[in-house]
View 1 (cartoon, rainbow, N blue to C red):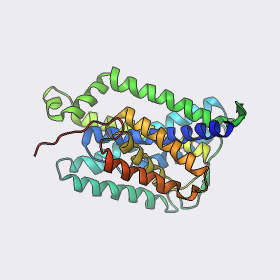
View 2: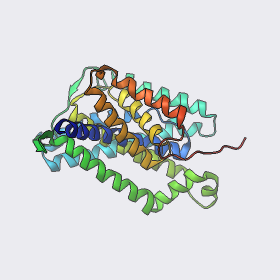
View 3: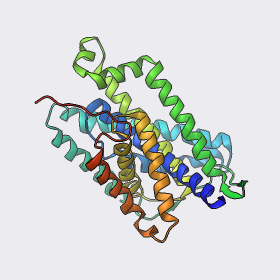
Amino acid sequence: MTEALQQLVNGLALGSIYALIALGYTMVYGVLRFINFAHGDVFMLGAFAGLFLYPLTGRQPSIGGAVLVLVLAMAICAAIGILIERLAYRPLRERPRLNVLITAIGVSLLIEYGGQHQAMLGKDPRTFPDLLPVAKLSIGGAVFSSHELVVLGLTLLLLIALRFVVLKTRMGMAMRAVSFNPQAAALMGVNINVVISFTFGLGSALAAAGGILYAMNYPSIEPLMGVMPGLKAFVAAVLGGIGSLPGAALGGLVLGIIETLIKATRWSNYADAVAFAVLILILLFRPSGLLGKTEIEKV
């Protein structure tokens, strides 16, 4: 029972990070109907932003310093996400979707391998500092790191904030309108470009938060660190239902728990393979995902 509880918390913590990244995938898909494969690299840039901002904390773990680094890293990555959309995707908006997909892959590779240049981030792994004091907590006989509970708590707060933005603000209403019918939204006076840029910025900010939380628990960062979490977050978005925000969150949590449970068995070397097996099964038997809705396309 104690081991099961520990695995559950570990799985929820990992799944929370996948959920934060998956939300960016699903928001962009909901508005533009394409997958931004550079999103996992924004997650990586968020971790590096936290590393470079760490001196602002006085190099002492503290709640205030961690909040400062988190907020600034989210703002920086939001600006990067908006810049990527403006320079790479907006000029191709009226082109075939295959063009945009290839461009997204190109942007991803540019960030990953450009970042390995010594003048940029460098290819050698770096140790991520402790933004918060680390403590061991015992609950029901299971021992947890305080960082895992921080991940769960902060993810919940960010999900509540995202829900408020999407459902209770004018920009959120505009996002939903563009997602439902962009042409009708434009006729009603919605600035499509602003809404799309805001969507990219919001998704990138969540990815940055995920990058910092991931680095706090797995404190070794390098320019390729976003590849596998980014792909798994994409799997999570498809699992939950691409285009559904609750589905992305649910998919991330489910995938995190599955991966953690697999790693606790003798099949641990196949944990990554299981994630993509889940993707194949979902596409075969429930393409709309757990919470997604089947869309009928007219031809």
